[in-house]
Length: 196
Image 1: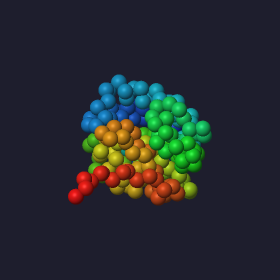
Image 2 (image 1 turned 180 degrees about the vertical axis):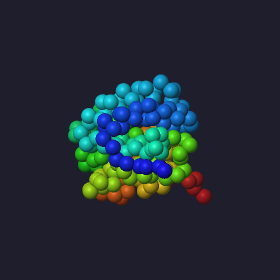
Image 3 (image 1 turned 180 degrees about the horizontal axis):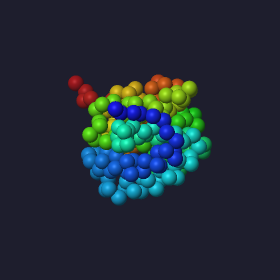
Image 4 (image 1 turned 90 degrees about the vertical axis):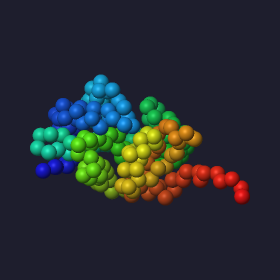
């Protein structure tokens, strides 16, 4: 029987072997194509991430077998300057970035083992790390080229607030289904149609 539960950072780290195996499985195939060594790097990062303010995690397991997990934390103010954050800040502008994302719950990672996908675990994990946010201010970013991931978040009611340059590369910020700014998120430009 599959169980999805909120867990502390220490309980998630206690399942490091299972977390690593799911990471390598989920991110080793299409679209991500990450090398197996990146799963080790993720565990190193996770050991630091559990110390972030507002850190929360959820774990999906069948007995002792890890099937997936999700992690989230509170986005700091000022907005971070590393990783993909500067692109998101430029795309939204400073005022929206501060108002919409700083202090909100940021979903960092969500992974489900390929053999367990399609059973609703991703949705349950996502809900487990966001549902208790009373004001609904939750967000995440993902590669917009990962069409399966983007389609999943859209099915779950997340709204894409930033859009890639032509060619479809880059990362998109998504606002959660109860985020108060989701209706104010800019819409992508309509494709230009030739004059008739």
